[in-house]
Image (cartoon, rainbow, N blue to C red; front, side):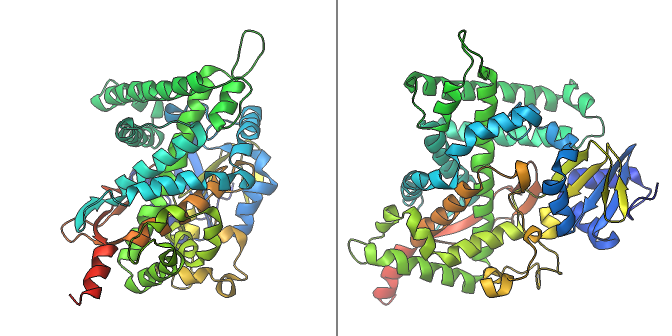
Length: 467
């Protein structure tokens, strides 16, 4: 069979590159071999597709011929049979149950909680303090997701929960990218043993969160997504979803509902801190909206007045968030395994072949983005984005398995970006290393995003006093 062009030979070295930096590996392979290419590791063939029309065909038109690839299926080690890992009728049932709570018509109801936790973080730092903004954003978004979807707060357990989620993600990726995943998972080595202990701790936190929700739940009430899950729980008098399934859904929503947005925002501020002109434009837009609402000049108490309706007055903030997800998409690749033969372009995709579509590669394609490595929020102005194919930008995937939380992420990202920017300006910490993209389950900044937080209230007071 004729396969698409791609690297051949040196499979061990190639497998190590693929395992260590999959996003960069996809980028290099496409740039060297073309927008439809292939490679082989062991007995498995992998195709990489970087054509918008073909991506649309795979994710929408012929999505029934594909299931999630082996790597994504193995994430059940972390998320069980939650919405991300399930297939077929189970996935359809889960999505129908959850969709009303993450639908565009419901999302605006979550804005007060988003704003409340954003405003609560305004006084979290000292002027001139060096902080890991990625860590701080993870805590904010974790509080938001537990409040809005579960009507619960993790409180001090949030630090532990965030850490255990991160540790487990590292372990899952180690298993997923191993040539012998089963052996890696069950090996008696210290990393496997530690991971199993971490999973137990993570499980206990999830059980505690669900049990607290169950204590507060009133039969027939469906105010939150957790209410809906508890209402659907299996009981002696009727069938339903199992308690374990509820735990799986909760951990899936916790992970995907806070990690991805925190990553995108951390990358956004990293980019802004190195592009002062773009940063000034963002601050000017935010000041114009919130400044007139302050109780006294420079009070900065108007952060708490932000609403969902204000997003329409923050077009530049949205473009900043959009551009950050172009350069550093939280979901950096989508993998699908063919369950039936299918043709892509001039080549056959036999059943059993894994096909990758990488947002990281597509979003940096010079065919669709002039000077693609440059941070340029204005490339999303209507007159500059007109004619760009829909599938040249797909940070949330698409089709029946597209991210169910996309509307939530857009609202949350813009409101947090605006709220924190009104009070704080972040600059690079010269004594800390620059963040490095680490492709785990999402594209997170390895070792954090270390920035110096300058209180704009102090800066403006000094300006008024002539200092």
